[in-house]
Picture 1 (tube, one colour):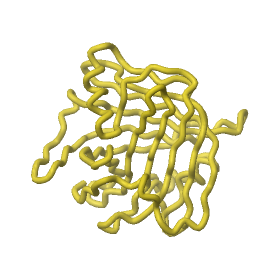
Picture 2 (tube, rainbow, N blue to C red):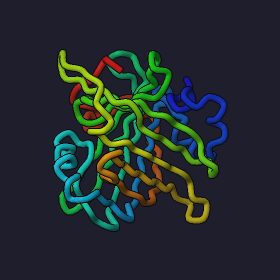
Picture 3 (cartoon, rainbow, N blue to C red):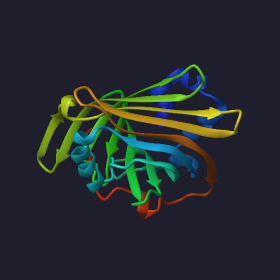
Picture 4 (tube, rainbow, N blue to C red):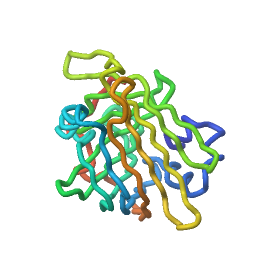
Length: 224
């Protein structure tokens, strides 16, 4: 079974660096998980008027208002089938800041939308379209697009002027034999909101037949 990233990129998947292909080429049928551990050189946030927006994000593990350097970091990528039979990949990012923070996301390939859809937070309130591509170094680039909010019967398209647009780049640095990641979130009106960058190494778990409860969302969202 191809991974959701192979499906989204098609033939371009082979342009990724071999280490990036390995990280993003597994599916639930492979019974593996990739655990990254490293240090974020810097976590930053935007100007003072962005703080209320970031504090709201902490309630559901989306974004947070920290400015710190040299922060221990981990990312847990598990692949599993959700209750609706969709191939899902977890992005559970933990930051050992002065007040520990977490950023949860769950990616699927949205058949109806023909692209990756990223469910953000503990309750999958936000569904975000993701465009992915390969950069000149064989790294993976992700950029967020249209966003939809779901809560019970309530659902609406979230206006981009009120939300953040994320640019994520992950690549493998041959010189230091580590992965690098750079995340930048900005708003078209308010400017830079939040981001971090740093390096990590990976450990592979084998014979993974169940996904730990702590990396699963508290609620699954059917709608894309």
